[in-house]
Length: 449
Ligand code: NAI
Image 1 (cartoon, rainbow, N blue to C red):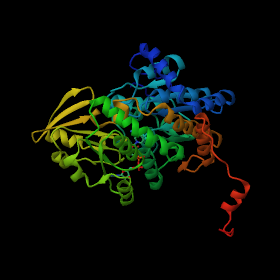
Image 2 (cartoon, helix red, strand yellow; image 1 turned 90 degrees about the vertical axis):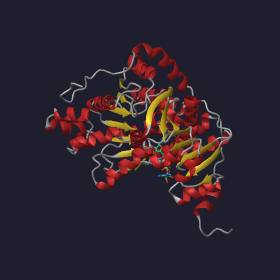
Image 3 (spheres, rainbow, N blue to C red; image 1 turned 60 degrees about the horizontal axis):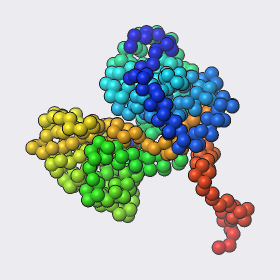
Image 4 (cartoon, protein in one colour; image 1 turned 180 degrees about the horizontal axis):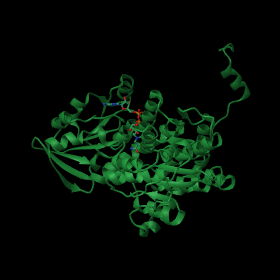
């Protein structure tokens, strides 16, 4: 990265533009399962609510994200895109966005840490009015610049910022209207920043919409995590023991789908209510130290760190398979594992074998989000709702610019409800409406029983 000033002329960085035709075909395939986003795109084309705005998005570069990017562009935004995970990029999609839509894209599947942060930086150099994040890496970098906490920045970003004048540094954040955040982990990080009083601009927590986490996190992560594990390993789930770390929205989905495939599912939790729910949903619940001894496959989805540590790994059976589908790979203690185990030996594309105490442990996709690394992430039909929320949240931020405090805000309830109504209509599902008498009854406390 050679840019020394806040310019916008960094060229796209994708693997191979010749992949664009395949990317276009797959993006069109996803589009047919995204009727809500299509309707928003049609309105955006007419109304151009994002006209003149620069938007930088740090999202998994998938066919669904391509459809979001095209929608934002239809709304008038000048869009730049970088990856939110080094392993989740679909290179054909990245090529398609650059060649066919003129969306600046900085993402290559398998990029190293340096390149990953250089790409985030390139999206910042775009000088966005609005940002979109999935895990808060982009917003995190913006804050380190704004707060002059350069020591906390990853090296490529730090090098670039050190080359900027004080004025240029301020400009990187000063005209920002706000950001949106896609995932649980990002929202947790942003709330921590707001509580510390360091959040520099408003953020809309898309993850908190009901039409996002109830569906994307549960049904999307549930199905695609199992899909990623099966594509990586081709194991039979029926008759196997699957340990699910964390019974939040994502964990519930994975537990449900693994059980549906015939696995004996064990849940580990730290929250008593969630553990109780898992037990009453019919799963065995126990501490990881107990589950580690009997699991054939162990998958974490907590948003926490060191959920499976080396002590747990020492307890595991020969041949145990370990995967993570939470946002960061820190859920598995892989660095400590590398210090005490022999390996890794790559045995299949997304499978690495480690020898620990004479036993084989198989780690999938280096502990990165298994559904995005080894499969294609969530199906388009569920991302339709998440990205409808994203597009409408961006419009809301721009239309109401200047009215938000520097805090984490929710997507307005009307938007959430509207997304649900549009999705139901697209599925041909009709529901009842309250009669005036029912409305009155529900609003009163003194009506007879
Ligand atoms: P959530 O907050 O609903 O659930 C997390 C659960 O993990 C909670 O019940 C919590 O008590 C539990 N937990 C925390 N520490 C634990 C520990 N040490 N052991 C066992 N359980 C523990 O969060 P949600 O929405 O389920 O998200 C989980 C993670 O998955 C986040 O990092 C999120 O960003 C990520 N995510 C990944 C997706 C994917 O495509 N793979 C999609 C959506 C979210």
